[in-house]
Image 1 (cartoon, rainbow, N blue to C red):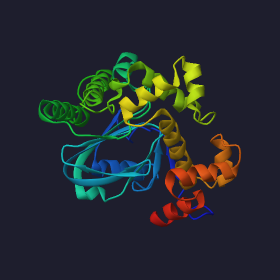
Image 2 (image 1 turned 90 degrees about the vertical axis):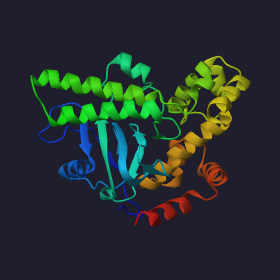
Image 3 (image 1 turned 90 degrees about the horizontal axis):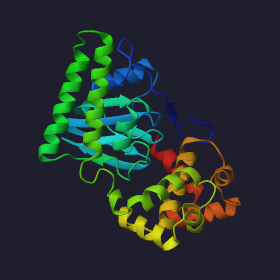
Image 4 (image 1 turned 45 degrees about the vertical axis):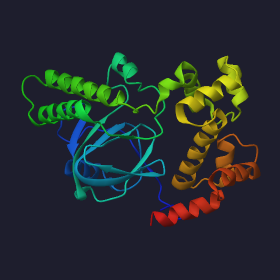
Length: 296
């Protein structure tokens, strides 16, 4: 706890599992909990991950939160937590049986990263539920991956590359499930460029007009592309990203609301407070107090 009574988020870098070959970590849920303990972490604490974490449930159910939204992962479902997101297990890992695949940015080749769209901001929902042939294909790749991790045979270099290629296949399969990218193809290149620009510049400007001018589109084009892709206008998309970061900072740092507003590009604390109240229905202080109480 910090002096405001809320839990500081743990920044978690990617570290190889003790005694395991370098590269991706492939773990069952008891192994995931043991890995956290070996690194001095509470597996149920909120964590900002510096790596990709793919989680699937084979039986039972698992409640998690990603960036303040709660999800339930049930049999056959997958959750993809991206670097920079805040993740927390909200139920006992022992209540479900499943697997987790962890890998750092840069682990996969450039062609795979591009095809899987790893360079783009995370979709709005981290959940995916493969069905039919897709489910069989994903399950088959995971089985091969787990088997390879259990039975290291032959040269270590060959084993490391086999794991890397299997992770690449898994990532590509999941990235191209129906709806996995939040329908982003509907908005095409205009939305993709806008999304990247917002991720880069949301602390500098909150005006659609500024993004339109920098990208060479009209405001109308950006608004249509954003609405076609994620179901809201361009201004709402920018504000959602600002609000998310404000919540992250309120819950997981002891920065004052004034300092947070300044960091996010607001001219003063009053403007930030009005924005936060309008978008969330409560003041920054009220949100911080409620979030702190919920995590005790």
